[in-house]
Image: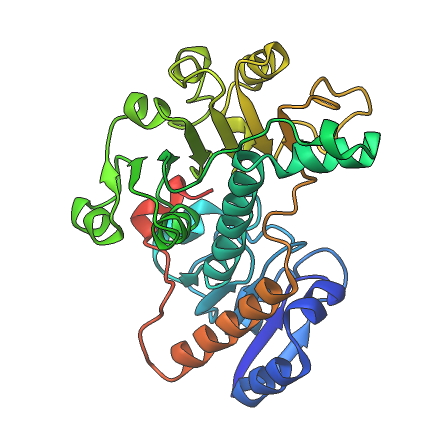
Length: 327
């Protein structure tokens, strides 16, 4: 019987693995919960499967072990699983939890876009602060989502979900910058692959790119200035992809609007420059935080472990050649 180690803190394991899912996992092997904040030195010779996620201590590169599968229950693996371990290809790594997380994050990006385009945040703030009906109805008209050309920076799983959601709402034009995404797959999504400049030259831009050496501060003053006056910038990915000083400057000036869920410093300081701006909506890094996503992440992990132990192909296996491109 396989030996399975849950490496996330107990409260995280319980949040992801509902009782029925834990029962399913226990039917697949002997399930242990990591005690403490460090993997034992012999972890790779003791367990066949590791379930990793938020709070997992860093899993170092190992070889010649009994460990056969790492099933990751969260989104990013950065700082959790050594890229050299993934790149070696000796141990299968599944990013099983990333698709449910991606869907939740895309939903948040879509909701933020709708709120900002339809001025819901403005109307609510006006009603709450003045309680005056007529004064709160400014602007008198808002903007429909389907008429806007949307630029997506990155067609990660989140970017793909966002594109599907936009097309489902009847958005006429969705373009994306992603030099690694297959053109045929983009056409199936109804998305046109374009240059970074073209993707940024739109009234709505949403970031879904991972942080790599190529993407770090990829969007700077020049790219932001390609957006039209009053353009909406949505970021639920990573702040390191953006030159935040440049973005903040344009938001303070009122040239752009933004919905931001990720920041260089978290939690935000109480004197953060974007607090109180009428053209900005801020959320505290909660884009992927839904009850449903957590349960779906657990289900995806258990499904993946079951597939692996039954000798079936993994659904979310990480390509070792892309280990160092992952966020």
